[in-house]
Image (cartoon, rainbow, N blue to C red):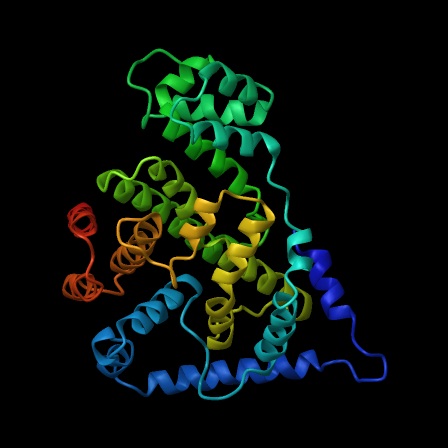
Length: 357
């Protein structure tokens, strides 16, 4: 998606200046990794665990974010010295992020059919016939809906579902909304890069989890018609993170195919730009104002509103994934829940997630 954009980014050097010495960058990076591994081997396992224990960090938000970014992208290679290759790539990508119009122009447009379906479903009194006519015009969309209606999650009988109307009855409006959004979102995920497959999939799993948790919390708190937007907001909330990750993967492929963007510099770049870019993409796609407001959950949280659901769902997903990965134990998990002062509904969901694991 961003290959040409990245190639243009790195090919636009001033001819009067020498080109960056990529090989020297790579050698320094490899040496830093070797030194770091040697250093870790000299430290006891107990000491290493203490370094990353949330109990040694006063700010729980910072601690959780650090753990979660290590979960997403792997433990940082940093060893107290500058990784010139990452610094160079980060500086170029950050310059691009400061001019997001170039990124937005390379994103796929939100199809009119997706906008129509979502708009109809957000109306409690929507016309089913009108909705089905819109879906019928998009064979791929209709195919996904029929296919999903035949999965064990939805189909309750032995009879195969072959008609769109029957599939709609089986899935319900929330199920159709989920299928439509998921189908579009998958277009943004490249499949050819193995590093992207491994780490990028974690971001998508997090997004799907946040979407489901947001919807469950919205339904528990009885926030109609917002519960329809809750899944939408949850699914889209990490889009900026995914786009930046794609840019970094493409950039490293261009300058050093064997290198991986997993240093602290990269994680800080994602952290500082991802939410703003997500909101810029939402505006570019002309998403509903309620969705854009819900995405602004870091600075604009109102009790009993959609952004509170997203904020709690995001933290719950991070805690759940870290617990599943063995990066948090049960005591640490509940310590975070108490620190964040979750609503009763969020606490109930947190306990349910522990019971499931």
